[in-house]
Image (tube, rainbow, N blue to C red; front, side, top):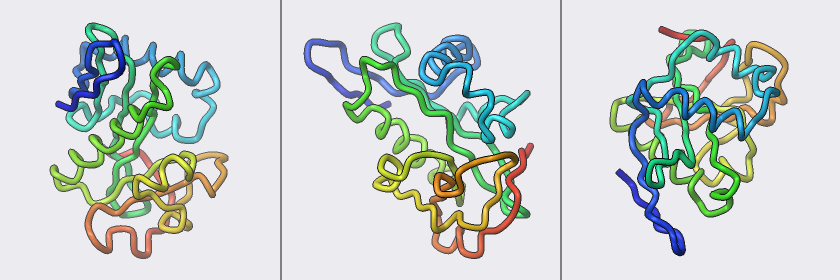
Length: 172
């Protein structure tokens, strides 16, 4: 578990998401993204599926979920990968590094479990410093309209993103 103390609050503890956390996590994601989240291309890959709970995390302060990140199994052409997202942080907890802590935890656990590659759709100023690159995902095609500059990948093992090419599809 990771703990982050903030002024005059209880520490935040990051722990793996449990199946029972789903309603709380979904509420957090809805507050962060609103109904527009369902129109996003990445949502096509998540519809009707469950995240990988061993690689998805919730940040708790006391009994309140204040942040979350989820990972999902996908394929890019014939290459197995993980899709990171959504990542959501309650508005009062943004800009303090919690989102980056959640991403680092998910990436670290994915690497420890032998994953080779993580894909996401996001903002370069946030995800670039966390090791993600649009250049590595230049030939990756999402299932729906998306700004290609926002499609990024991070190889967890050397060469995993070399020659990455193809349509992203949901994997078992």
